[in-house]
Structures are given as structure tokens and as C-alpha cells.
Image 1 (tube, rainbow, N blue to C red):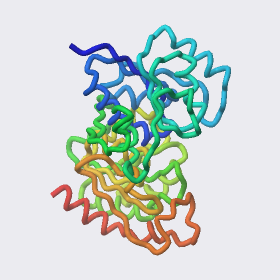
Image 2 (tube, rainbow, N blue to C red):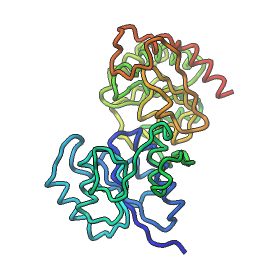
Image 3 (cartoon, rainbow, N blue to C red):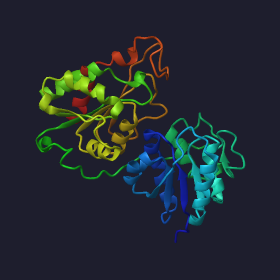
Length: 339
């Protein structure tokens, strides 16, 4: 019989990181099947967590990213004491992110040492980046005893469960067509974005073959979406939804795709967690740290002398690492994966 072991996770603030954290949640559930896992994270992460069956409750973190908020963190921690968590796992590396479990008087407080968090964490781990090269490994390792912190753990890939999409967002022609979802945005910066003209050229090729194209992204990607639509002749079969959906709706729409093409972004990780056929286009970043975690994801990246540079904008001004990945190359890969 499983012993009670309720856990509070201090969650990350980025979409992709939260998606990858599901592998940690799955590992904890394997070890403690009867446990309750709650996640303290920004309110916008709630739709992600709602689609992860391991999570009991998403608790709103009102202190915004980058704000110290000592008084607020103390109030939150004291307010959580009555829940009697057995353990907290702190995923962010900052000193302040470990305050709430300490204020909540949680007996086991686990996390990587980060900003010298001795005392706040009483189950600290020293990270060996060479032995744990993937972010997901660093998350999942925290589910295991400190004596195993240097061992790269096996892990289950994230697997989100989508919900039904409302008819207002899900065009009726879906049943008659294959659907391509394009995710042209990247919060990190423009260097991670495959050129808009390339996305448009790919959309043109696919609509000519009878596909429907949905463009997904935030309000910041709305103009990019419009530019892609402008480059596609068959306007009836391309829909720009950038900035027109909530995160939960975007997740559920991506789940209807026959194929997804994305930059290295949060939506890329969502598509992978939904087990959708995915082509992930990498330029200035490396899939050696945060790859899409699914068997049906294909990574496209070309070698360049200046990369990967991990810069938000191209320091050379030519953006060769993305410009030289041609739409026809992506189309060939898409056709091979759907044949």
C-alpha cells in the first residue's frame, strides 16, 4: 500500500519548461501512486496543467517573474501550511523561488542548489551539467534520491490530453482535409524564427495539395500570421489565429493537426506532448538541451560556422542558420513523415 506523499511543485514560468516538467510529474506518480501533486505557477499555465492527468491542482502564483515580493511569498507560504505537504520540489534556480516552501514549513524541500540556497532547501542537489545534458533529465532527477542525482534518469515523455474544440474555432472543412498547423513565433527572439516568407511558401505548396493551414501564435505573432496569409493564394484554406485564441484553445486546436511545423518554441513542445507529427526548425539554439520529446518529431537544423550562437537576434545580420532551410526541404520531410 502506497504511503501518503503529497508534493508541491514550484513550477517554471515558460511554456516549454512546464511541458517538459510533466515528465517529472509522471516520475513522481510512478513512485507515489496515491500522492497528490499540486503546482504553484503563474495563472497562464493553468490550461497546460489542466491537460496533465498527474496534477491535482494548479495554484496561482501572483508574484510575477523577476519580482522579489518577500511579503507576498511569505503570505502564500503561510497560507499553504494547512495543506501539510510532505515534499516540495523547486524547479526554478533562483533563491527567491525557494522561499514559499520554506515559509510553508514543508519538511522536505528539494531542488538544485542554484543561487546558494542552503537552508531554504534541505534536500539540495549539486548539478552536473555534463551528466544531465537535457533539461528534462534535470527535472526528472529531482524525483529520485540525492545519491542518484548524478545519474541520467529514464523518463516518460510529456503526454498531454487535449479537450474538444468549439465549433466556432474548428472549421467544418476539417473532416474533408488534412490540416497543417504552423507555429511561426518564438518568445526568445527573432533569431529563432524561420522566415515568414518560407512559412508562406510552405503554406502555398500545401494548400495547392488540398491541405488546410492554421497559423497559431500569440498577439505578438499576429502581423507575422497576416504576412503568411498574404503569401498564400488560396485564402479560403488558410486561417490566421495568432492572438485570437487562449492557450487552452491553442492546445486543443494543435491536437487536431495532421502535421505541425514550428520554430523552437513553447508551441513546439506542446505539439510534441500531444504526440502530433512535428517538424521542429532549429537555428541559433540547440536541440541538445531542450528537444521536442516525442518519437514522431523531426528536427531540422543546418550547420553554420557561427552557430548555434544562442542569441536573440542574429549577430552576423544574415540569419543564415534559418534562411538556408528551404521550404522544399521541409515539404520533403513532411511528405516522408505522412506517407
